[in-house]
Image 1 (tube, rainbow, N blue to C red):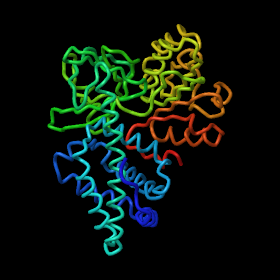
Image 2: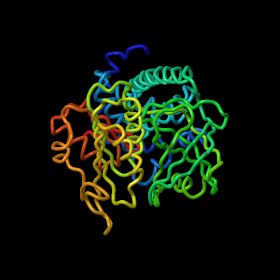
Image 3: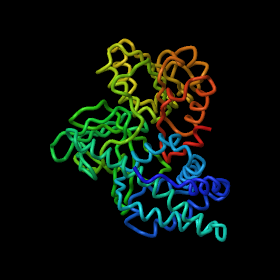
Image 4: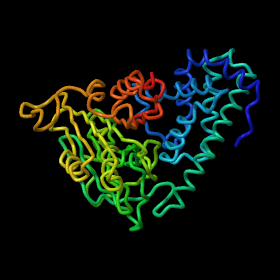
Length: 405
């Protein structure tokens, strides 16, 4: 563990919170500008999150503000620290990368705050940064050690052969990936993701996270990817260019969102759109390993055209006997009919969940786009569901404060 922060540093950092609330996004925008001047550091990041939306800038600003506000109560930041550490495993962030971030962040604070960035303030934030960095580096070393000790474990980037390419819906395609070295695959935790580096024909070097959509096994991974027409190329590259026999590179399975080895209560799985991917991994695991577990899977999508893996999920539910499946179509096609292709028109609602699932007795797992999560994470809290029973994964930067709000 790092040396404890001094009382004076805690006081100064906590007092800087109002300035960070006002100038946080400006600081993080300048920080990324400084950081990305170094090409080998720039290559570590997923630049889809650095676009015009400013999602990564806002996410980091919120994280820094939360750190300042909780500097005297760091246990409150435990889940965020774990999520960051898991992301760092995925992007292969190593201890030697931390000084680059320190220089960029502290330089940005000084540039944006100007005369208000006193020597004492800068010293306190330098101490606070390295305190958190040591916590993260320690946790990341522990995760890497745990991975390496398991059969099929690896660190850094590993090559996988695309063994199959399966069209699941009008917008989602699955890719079966087998280790190119012929050795076992690391058994992931159901719900985790893989991080890929993709070299596209136009010369772009992309980093992307895709949830694993199969149960843990030692032979292969399956990812199921939605083709994003307006994205920055990762999903389009996979759909349009990658073919059976091609090689993809990935880091080990990562993520703090997963079904536990021994669930202690019923589970409700709730997804929107391509958010079904980690849920399929969980459902396959429940069907295979938990024959007595009560499970409810509720999914929302546009129509039968976008509904992926429907028959597979229904088959698992029927075989298991205690998995209940319900699907909502928000834009059903003319030949879609409730009771035939899906269960109900419209959107999933809290009222429906209260009536049809053991909402207050279950662990709830959610995955989908941010509007979906904002609605349900907040809605479940207002409905009285304890926060420690609500687990969620999302696509894009970890803008936890916005979602929790």
